[in-house]
Amino acid sequence: MKIIGNVLTIWFLCIGYGCLAQVTRSIHEIQYMTQIELQNCRDTSAYFGDTVRVIGVVLHDGNLTEAPSNSVVGGYRPLINIRDTANFGLAGDFSSVQVHGIYFENQEQTPIESITELLAGDLIEVLGYVGYYKGETMIFPLDSNSIQVLSKENAPTPKLISIGELNDSNSVNQLGTGEKYEGEFVVINNVTVQQVYYFSGGSRVSFYVRDEFGNSMVVSDRFLIQKLNTHSTVNPNSLETNGDFDAPQVGDFYSSISGIINHSINGCPDKQGVGYEINPFKSDHYAVDSVFTGLRDFNYDNNSLRSLVYPNPLIISSSSNLTFSNLPQTGLIQVYHLSGRLIKEIHFSNNTVAGVSSANLEFGGEGTILWRLNEFDLFTGSYIYNIQDLDSETIQTGKFLIIK
Image (cartoon, rainbow, N blue to C red):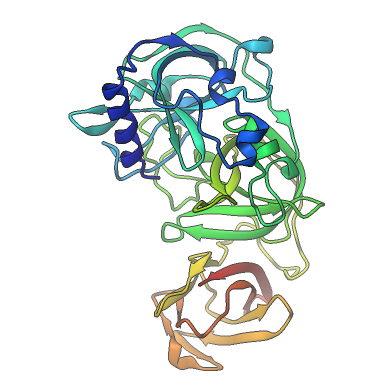
């Protein structure tokens, strides 16, 4: 997530308009939007660009965040979310906001290391300016000394909401009912995994879940708990050196998922985000009720390394590669359209491949096959894949998305 352009804009606004006059504002005041504003796709705070003093209760430990960034000194972007002190620190409407833990020093984005030492329940005071990035209002501290711990409170609890308040069946954000939860710690119930996609070379994962009414949202990996074991941590105060997340499969069912809501605006002119997302930050935030077994064989071993298909989604250009990795020694890959039509069948064994057309297939290293696609091979849409291990007689299944 690169925000240097937005941050610089806000910084110059502050200097140009003398916004260093400090006014104490509640989180509710900063976040509140009228229904008319939201219906007109306006979700920018009325205090955008102002320097404010804000007091809130920390929603999660600072050392749990894991947000790599090439534009920040040290390669790590710290952040926390805080909740308004009104109503004894309980969740309410427009009651939470993200505190973005960077400031400018010698024209460089510099992390505020003290953020990683904050704990859930800390009551803090932040002096910063009100910013905005891709649909989300944030507080940017003025410098490394702009966050002070006032006292210790009880760790906040999540608020139960529904996906339908946040997004529709196409993951388009519902601003009128969802904006009040931006930055909040929430819990959603009874959702099924509909799509899993890997990125950053297969070292990171996010997944879409759908509720019983068809509403959809992304479960994102802003925190360490959802980083794969191939991810090396960048948070200097992280509890671990690598991730340890076991990615779900399409069809897995969660009785609940808890986490922080962040916003990537879509459904408005020139806005191409993914809607409201949820970011779990502890292992007990994933309540797995059942694991999908419809296309998995009885010999499937949960301790074995699952095959990966990435990038997912794949944006097709004149020449694009879809990668199948962590493959067994001998096996069969089948790719189907959602209608059930077989699109591609790939037999592989001992570094040789054969298929409907093997000319566009090659091994990319041990256990890896590259499928070279051009813009005419697949249409935009979702596809199902089965990966069968012919030696152990096991099958893995999943979905990938093609975008043109």
